[in-house]
Length: 431
Image (tube, rainbow, N blue to C red; front, side, top):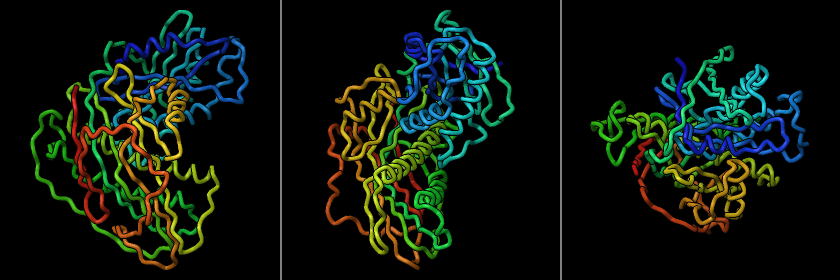
């Protein structure tokens, strides 16, 4: 028996309302959460047209030859940054005026594997044996309203399509638990003298990979308590735990230091969630948001062609802040990232482009964060991975975000210091 997809009714309405406008097809992403028994789809978003792409006429012979796989996978990569912990890209959809044919299924198969590769290529965490490995392809016929739903095992490139059930449910997005926490990070990344050919971005990613292991092995407190991972989230037995890790020293030619308070948020469906589900969702949100901010910063430095400073000089950069935005009629919030010189209107426009949703500027929740990346170069320096004494800017950076909305619903202390096991604490909220 195939997997069952429980789908928010508004997703069906969204698919039905998409107008092909003389196009042969429209494709997009399906967003939600996996569980062992069934998957939940709470959002669908079309892939925006490429600006330089010429509109192709509605022609059955054209089929799907014009589907831009590179553009679709880049869209998936951008959208994956906007998803809090617990949510992921579950698969892809395509809308045509024709009913499902073999050419559609073959194209969707290639696309769903390419999308999965795109969203996971820079992740700091790995899938576990308990993770669901099936991803969905959905064909929606705009003429007959018929739906064709299949899944593929994305860990097996030779896997065959399996049938899947697609069932709509009203109010699905309203029944989710919210998990929130703050992680105070101080990540010291030495730039090794033996890897001079590595780029700054690659060195930083390698350093983050070491830090990610501490997050994975950390002790997680739920509402201030350690609970057995196999217990129900809303119940659970207390445990005593003691975990430590060691520091190391190496010769380096410079270093990158990431400091700040990171707002983390995750969501899990309220259908008998386990403690381990909540912890895993928060772990992955912590790792995703730190990695995404670094990636966005390096993209910005490259885009603006900011020159590197001379040896022995330090560079201070403000990492982008996280911005949360509610989904109308849902307890779930999505996110984006904002530099200090970006306006709220730019964030609104980005949401419209990536998620095909118009948001209200007054609904933006800008996290209260000050995060910096310090890049220094000093030859033949011994650097400890638990070094936390890097100098901060003497004056506040002018681009520090001014809060428009401040909501301290569940502000919790959390520490991720290199010489100690990460001890992460968070609260859950149910509506």
